[in-house]
Length: 286
Ligand code: DGL
Image (cartoon, helix red, strand yellow):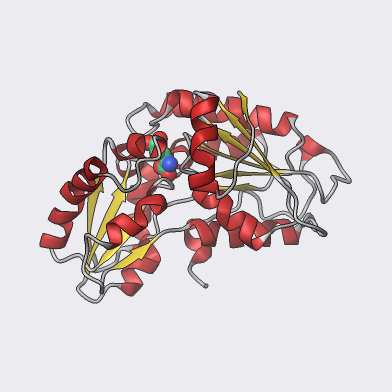
């Protein structure tokens, strides 16, 4: 889709192998993906669906989740540490599968690793502005994303005449981390965030946090059938494909597995993987 590039951007347009993995980087080197927790698995799933031959490394920084209420400097420090770890594992590209981490840290990572493909993500303001019929769009995202300069610039650039109402959702990420995608408490919390947006006439809702696609079925039951729900995971996967393709770094061959790390409770992540990733897997300590 033509708008994909607007919110899933690549670090460097130069077609060169990444310095950190050296000239002649192998196509079958892994892709490093991370998030504050398990939310980025929604993006990882899109990457797996589009690029099954890629070997995937995933770090959930669940020991520090949620990022949404933390300072930008704290998140940048986490991004630096996780990126260094993934590059140490031989990653040929990085995906910040987190809107909040992108807002705080993607610019610094691109400065640190100017030749590395680095894909970040932003709330899908441009497609939402194009899709709305009522002229009112709601953005569900973290406080950190919504108060960032990057988000303000996104609105300036793409909102146009559309009225964009932002809604931070504290507490929601924690419920999703716990695998509580359908329970009464999650429903009540979400209802409280969505009802004011509907009352204002929103007919399009942006899921501006990678955790939220996991509660899309719940959300779907709380809004009119005509409401558009827009998230960016698939567009990020396409942008990654484009970036790797430009550098002749796409892997080929049989599907490869993913490896998982968590800075939090590895047993807890292992327990929710079948629900959020569709299969069981070992989770290592990070
Ligand atoms: N999944 C993240 C995002 O896309 C961050 C959630 C959080 O840790 O607050 O913004």
